[in-house]
Amino acid sequence: MTAPIAIIMGSQSDWETMRHAAETLAALGVDCEKRIVSAHRTPDRLFAFAKGAKAAGFKVIIAGAGGAAHLPGMAAALTELPVFGVPVESKALSGVDSLYSIVQMPAGVPVGTLAIGKAGAINAALLAAAVLALNDAPLAGRLAAWRQQQTDAVKERPEGSA
Image 1 (cartoon, rainbow, N blue to C red):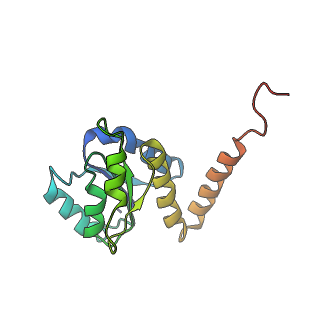
Image 2: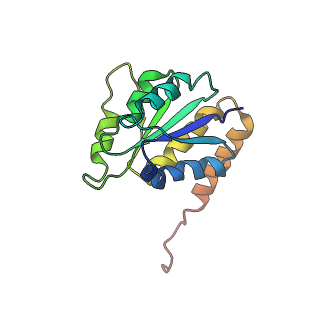
């Protein structure tokens, strides 16, 4: 069986950001498949993947992209599955270019857009898990426990204060 979540990225260098999505999903016990699918360098691969993603059994796509960041939008244009876009921080414009490219989709081609970089990758994984948890009670429990751990980790007072 295919993993329920696909994590796609435009290049190997995007993995430094997107690995945080994979690690978060692993912590929640959610399988994911990771692929390099460049909108610009491998458009045929992108078309084949996105057109066949639903039939392959994927439920959600997390797409990370830097620079021109066309991957999330193109994937969303080619599939009915939910697509969460993660802007990867770029050297030239610190990921703002990627953010603008992903967030400015035309009406009718939705892409859930997350924060730039690591935080966005983690949150994309959490959103994808939340979508799956709607029909998966054990996952819903693991997700609730993960969130409770986040809450419990916040101290009431700063260390060293009276």
